[in-house]
Amino acid sequence: MTRKILAAFIKDAALLAGKGLFETKTASRESLIAREVGKHYPEALVKYLRSASAANFAADLGKLADKQGKSTTGIEMALKEFYLSMTQEDLEKSRGGYLGQVLKWTVQSQTVEQISRQIRLYLSRYSDVSFWKVQSPRDMDTHEAETIRKNIAKISKNPFVEFSVSGDLLGGVRVFAEGKMYDASWLKQVKQVSRSVKL
Image (cartoon, rainbow, N blue to C red; front, top):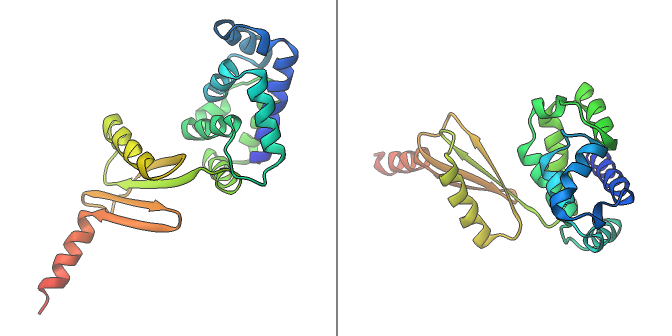
């Protein structure tokens, strides 16, 4: 499924290139994109199309065609942002272009969670993105989440941080990365204290 989404996006980008996207000034690209592939095209992908040059796009296509290395392309980073912001409601919006056709078919057969899982799996296999899942007892505010993202970025290249709420945590956080769990939750601390005071 992810390969279909990726292929559809590349086809749309090629279509836009044929309409003069890369020769158009950055400020004017959005209206061209909206006219050719619809105003509901995913913002993360529009952001890539607004800023990419013809040379960058060609380089990304070359890297995607030769996936011996694990360097992440701008296209894959845009796909990552699309994954992070995607909701079921977003998927059900009417979209144009090849991507719109793929997503329309997808919505009939899969949930946003299934599509997200496939995008995540693709990125973990074919790019150098490292995945981190942070669980907390409640939704984190923007400042807390950004602080955690910055700290993870200091120790990991291209981190892809996902946040979720876990009802079994009393406080603190639990982090999953590269098949390991790092438990800094209060529950773990309570259990350790309980074991240490047992007679």
